[in-house]
Length: 357
Image (cartoon, rainbow, N blue to C red; front, side, top):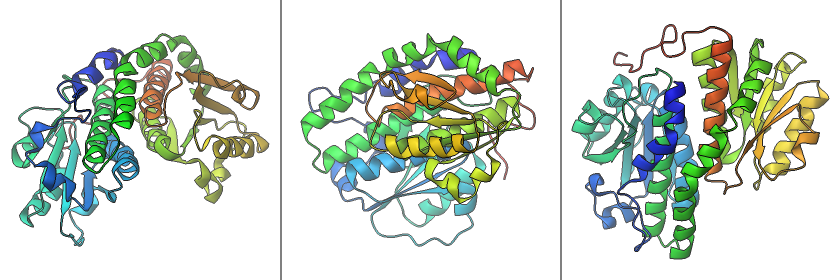
């Protein structure tokens, strides 16, 4: 797992390779097997996924709706396959699965395909069942991922979804100048990630701080909410510490009952439009004596006065921040598992690919 976390400076480059056209300033996806006109006429997008792929899809939902103004739904594949959900004209169906063999995701895809909906896959494994049976799709090119808890394939999903959202936005009129800004930020991603990896010692100290907790809360808003969910999942998967992820504002609707001196909260709050709102949540937790670890922008000089620990990520636009925060929560989970003596690459009761219902 540690090796694969550190491979992300190169795996995200592989995920982007061949998709960036610096002249036309629109990502290229020849494997979709759909014309620009067909994509432009899309009225609704449905994602079906499980586990970390579900959380990545939520990030895609936020991006596509903001960039391209297309309604998006993200569904648990295990639930969607047994629902008689209405299918509207000009719907596009994506199934997200790193292995390409997830049984529930395959079943949901086959049902949509049976009803004549264009079905696309986003997978890592070339020649997998989803890759063969969908009408088109996108490979992650993250390389083999041996650890059961996904790391580099997850961030590759985030990058591919950002590129796809940009593609749809450009087809619908996003200015070239805006696309150029996003391309430049994507090209800076490897250096951003390298900066975080060089600060591993600080992340390890936070892992030591939370390793004895019974429960850890992960909170975020906007683009960072799905990363709070992924962070909680990572901690559960490899360290066996119970963790719960939720939108920061939702803590008042129940989870705040868990807050006490022994329940740390890890709050993703880099600079952005919701920064002050999340700071209010931090104050509410601290008023109830809850310890807080913040994942914050490097240039933020205010937040350390309001929390016990701060982990820094480079200053970046809000659509890049979740990719950077992911590296941090992966390393927190990894080091907490090391401290607790867990079998990190083969966590109990888990399998790399869930091929049965």
